[in-house]
Image 1 (cartoon, rainbow, N blue to C red):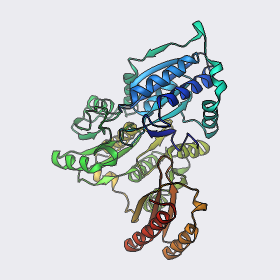
Image 2: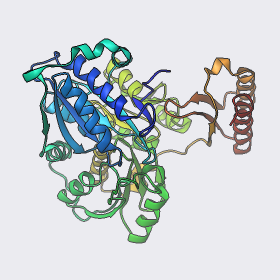
Image 3: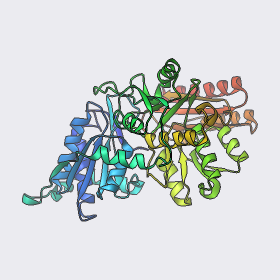
Image 4: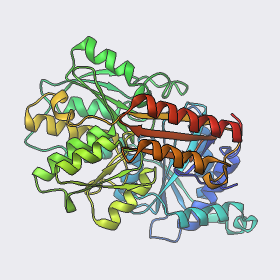
Length: 449
């Protein structure tokens, strides 16, 4: 069974593969692979606010030190902060301990190279092979060659300065009332403090992590909490982050929830007007709504689609030299400023558009109508390649025929959980609901749910 999924290694904490023993092996492999890649032998290790983060952080660091590399611990910070600090501190690699939007009892490990980008499939495969290789232990350092650990006290400050510099110098957030929901996760200090320093009045929710409450009924997965607070407080906008801070969901002053597709539309139009959108192209995944694609086309902007996963978006952006990309789920990437999705950076970019245009969020974000979309998560006992699910291809073909070119059908396996995601888009709500239910029911029958 492969350890690395679409976004690193992930699972229930203290159960295989997310055990301290496995974290130690990951640390050994990362230390071995990267200790001779540069002058410093530095490995950055960050985490979100989960209880199990302490356990895995210590195990990872032990493995890194055992190989003679240095472990630089930055504490609870967003995933994009670890990517940034890996470059800023000229480290050989960065490791983030997080299960993103999953509940507290899960955890994960994702790895960045010295350039701040997530590792390629080839490098992940090499690390996985090293983890399983008994001879890896023969490479442990001895005597004075054993590595040292450092805790970087100014890591949060470095990241905050970088973010504030991304905001236009001629603008501020004075007079703006912003509700911030940090999901009791990694942005709980960074996001509100930056907004306040730029002049906003910040109303905080989800900013009291206790190790167990990350993503629980709040944050990007539960924007209704943010919506209620925005309306109650009469705020200008609401910002909801996920547990590791790499995605953002918005709520406008009227209480309407706006996902990554609306953010991409807003920023794409703004960048095109400033002649800052290379190739007049935006990169998104197959999950982005057909309404976004049609709107961008009407503005003379091309939408390129990739498989689900921000790493694939980034790969396509780097190949084509594109500047803006992202996912419907709220991962937005600005390749001129960052190497991975960054929720706080995205918030600042949207707020800058609001300030520049001097218009409310409801007008700036309400640029297109979504084509009706149904998404069903199908939990199964086992996952197989789609081609091996008996009868699925025939049902997908029939569904496409019924949509008659006026919609889309997509089935994909989750990269981190035992489930399939069934998505159907089309202009007839009743039809797409029926098609999605039929496909989901067939998968349950074949694979068990």
